[in-house]
Image 1 (cartoon, rainbow, N blue to C red):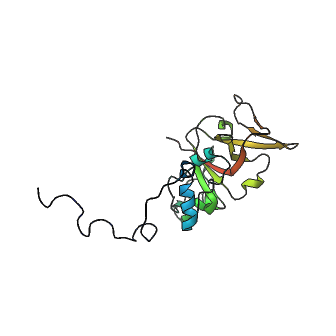
Image 2: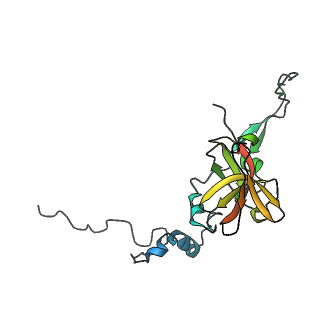
Image 3: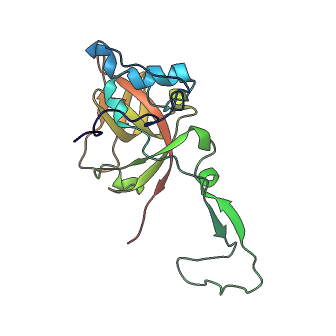
Length: 203
């Protein structure tokens, strides 16, 4: 049929209106650089990268940003809410105030992200499968003994309690069914952040 097929004048997106503000061109890349392409483009474009992209092993790239969470405000009532006896009845004259959950859960919201937990190794400290943990990357390199950390160990990312003993590093579970993990020479290890809070839902 005449008049069908081919490119129509004016069709498509105008040149220079895409993400980079200028025309683009297909190029060939070595296979070894394909995985790094988003990182290189972000650096060139001035975008801020995820805080875990500089981890020493590609396994950490499993921690990809899923959704940028907006600031959320809920009403906070200052009243006693006892979990046992002697709870007081709510007073009618109590005025609520707004609470920003981003700032309540972390002192450094801009350097904080959420990770969903799988497994039961931290149940003893109140972190259950399916919970969200709040991870602060601000002082990850100076994590101290006793802190709960998100760590990269070889090809896995795990949440454990950190112990440094006589220059030896251990990652402890909060479940007696799991043995401590000792970090030995030759293992890839990096503390990605410190767990500041856990979010557990009752359903």
